[in-house]
Image (cartoon, rainbow over all chains, first blue to last red; front, side):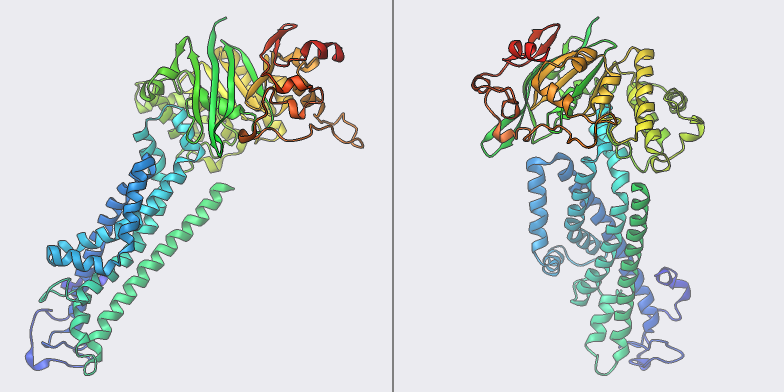
Length: 255
Length: 327
């Protein structure tokens, strides 16, 4: 992933440079991952594409986190009818397949580097909201929150100094799960042609271009797909690590 | 002496399948300035609910149905939530059964005390930290300058309870509610915490409401005892008198079912047959009647009022006859 951010310096070729004569070359010493339909170096394109994919994923994750946390916090703190309305809205949103929902949204607002993270972020917000709400409710019923309330804390203060710091680790786990999901969603949307538009390329776009020629040029679709897989695995492994550290910390606290 | 806390006709209800039923019924009592009042009763008798009512921290599904709560003569039940917040911590403060869970696990204890001080005083963080160190010292924590940087999980239960007490004192309250504050501690630590509370009460002319199911703790600590059963007060009086000559049949049964090292281990420990009433199935008349060995038909007809009997209040319609039985 770090490689993708450094790509302008390490990429062996200009990703937009077209070499018509070199189209559809297999992996070789000069082009480690081969070239694409327009003779562009695939490794360079994957590195550049990764930059877009990961930027979209990070932006989407942050959007999901902000919306989701605010959503869940509002529901968990206010409870009552507001809780019902917010959570049922979340349920309803989650009931619609994400791809379908994303498709409709992208078609409505048009595909761009700006709209994509927003749509993906909004798609991931309900799950984050559910998680945040349950964490907030658990936190609010804990003895030390009641104790803080008993010593005269206002509700705002209660949330900022007692609730938020204690749910932060859980949000962090959710953050990495969301990042993986965002990479996936972005790739999927780009793959069906609703994501990043050529000549820019994300991994999804590359896969779309490669997919059409899968029988002749296996490398064209394989390498971008591998990149997506590795990234998602990395995010998930990271989330798992945080969760494990969290567990061990919880157990020392409870001793 | 003036009454710092005066509760009148407090009734709390919970929803049941048959509509809202009382869990605390017409509870009235007062705490004098500087007085140590013990509130005893078995689980589910409404002790903790009483404490949370005093802080106005009752949450759904439990509801305060009626009643007045005077703090220094002001009926605070009529105040709005934001007006009442000024009372929390600065008039009444509370300490809890489990000090471990009463503290924010990821915040240094010094910061937690400072936060609490800053709620009540307009001073700088630095000055507040100085006060925090002073508070820790006054609750008997060694090396308070270093301890402010500790996290809750680095300290023992007894030490943490002292920290909780320090936080409770940070707003300089006039009343301290100790809700089973010594229950989770082992006996020697319990003893030390009680001694500390005693000293603080005297130094600061603090009123303490000690809620416990441990009769020994209540006997040792409090000036006066309130005995609760089924959400009602059944007997109240001076500690010594209540313990040496209990009047209400429930108090008597409670004291009879005590056990300590003087009790013959070969004899079964006396117990009170039956269970405390469930809110959806409260007996009419006296709540204790179904379990009372002295109950007569009339006990189920009328709710006994607290009556003054030999210098204390007892809620039992047969008290005049039973008084002679006991003596």
